[in-house]
Length: 180
Image: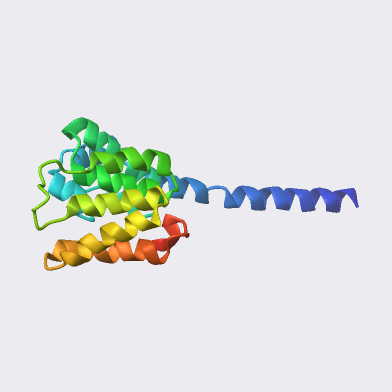
């Protein structure tokens, strides 16, 4: 009986150990070696911010959100803060329900170079996001309306679709609204 019990324990221990190596594979998927990281950090902002293979999206598309956030932060430290990278870091932080750290990044993504008569309403889009973060549905509705009124600019039209999605799912966590 003792021998049977010992064999059962031994087989259970071997089974548990056999499943253990799967975790490092996930970590490996998210890890960048120094050369890969340097290559990504040396990209132009247009490539780093928008290219699925040569920027932060390489990590985010694999579900490596924390690593993508760290990469964007390093990019901004190395290359200076750019409104788009701050905004996308904020979105990633929101996907992790980190509203406290997303909020200042959203403020950092506001563009003082865009005058109010500019047809591109970037700042209204960002302020709509801030309204969502602050759980202010009236303000979010207001900024959605401003984008919708200026939807002749395709960028405003695309951004209005995102704000309406936030409005329609106002009480849901951000990650649920934008699940892939």
